[in-house]
Length: 413
Ligand code: IMP
Ligand code: MG
Image (cartoon, rainbow, N blue to C red):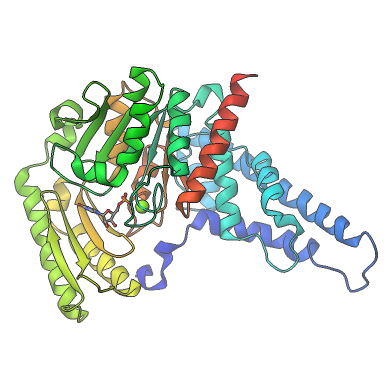
């Protein structure tokens, strides 16, 4: 039961990388007792050189891992042997160069007291991923974005004039298709709930001077992988697309009975959890066609620990249920609520890749905030696309800016 140890909230690869960087931090970044002029610069140059070396070595380990992946023997890769939970790499990662970029911004090699952190490593990985997706052989064709926390604050809407809007326009202008892959699922074919969440983006794209076909490159996948909409400049809004046109055969084969069995079971577990955790006055259930949520009652807050407890319980019980043998589900902690959705973002991204004519996984990027291995809903997208892990909507703006710079730089080479 590593749940209790919160292992699911740690990313083993990032933690391991951090531990490698701690060695030069301890040995080379500290100030000497006999301080002489010039020592500061000498020490930070030394730390910088050694950090860069570690990132260069990691680059090699990843290249070796990619080689074993290509032989279908990922477990033999040295990196997988050292970090068993490390995922699939869709591209090589120019980590040394990414380190230099982030070091200029964050000055991590200048720090004396605070070792390279989780966030330092996460941002270096993101930069390296953006660089890789500008290379001609893996040039980005599809960028998918989570909604809450990634494009807008949790529970908020994308407001007119938001910086995220101009960044998405910049990607569309460069021929990149955009998918908003959100858990928020509304069966209504008018898509009006999505217009509330990000109508400002849709208006901005419609009013831009992009070509018709580029405008139609904006899609919305709701309910993880349950409802697809595409921007249609002719009708000036979102057009609902029938499931038969885009869902994988595997998904079309999920029986409606299995869907209701899964949601019934989830409902039972969530109900019981509300009682066990004495939340009858703070939380309630909300069942939809293809999802069920435990949400706070008006004016109430569910403690974070309880959200975690509920998500782990429901994950555990559902995994063992017969319905889960037939279809996939995603149970996650949405920050204020807990949801169980039919399907997950892996399917959402896969369907978009296929619907758009067969975009390769290594030319797809998913941007999201939920990458812990249990109780998070962006994690599954890792199986089918390169990913960047952001912490707030401002980081989304920054990583798109980098991406656009690298794409333009690679074009002019
Ligand atoms: P995301 O971050 O864009 O994937 O959105 C997740 C949030 O959408 C959740 O935390 C919920 O507050 C909200 N939401 C609304 N409807 C649903 C649903 O049917 N399933 C999951 N989340 C939903
Ligand atoms: Mg999110």
